[in-house]
Image (cartoon, rainbow, N blue to C red; front, side, top):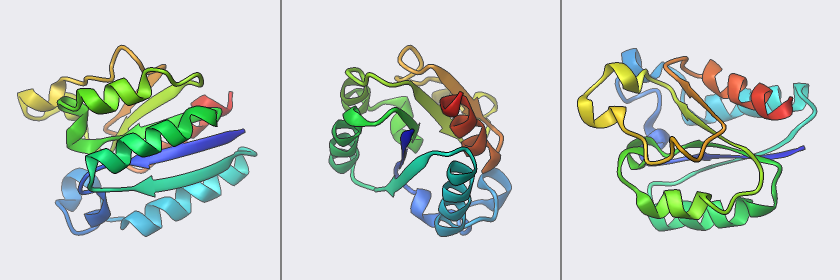
Length: 139
């Protein structure tokens, strides 16, 4: 099974950005865990992160051929209809992940343009949310 993990804006500063909300792992450390979890589940995983919305959209298009996608568009989750439209033709299941519990934060973070597209949402579980997402897709 092939899975793309697409991380969005500001996730490159994990470990430096408000560790109480996002945890103390760097993006490299998180990706190392994701690759290990994927291997344990018999999955081939490709992790990508960008701060450029157009590049994220391109990566969504690239993922049309994979079996499943884990997305954490970060702030784009709440307003990027372009990312939603790019994910809509996806054939495989999509799992939305957020490190923090967006449902208990600012009002604007409680809305997801992806909510009606995704097969599963994982919020507020920190890095382990990615493991749950991979397990969901591997089933």
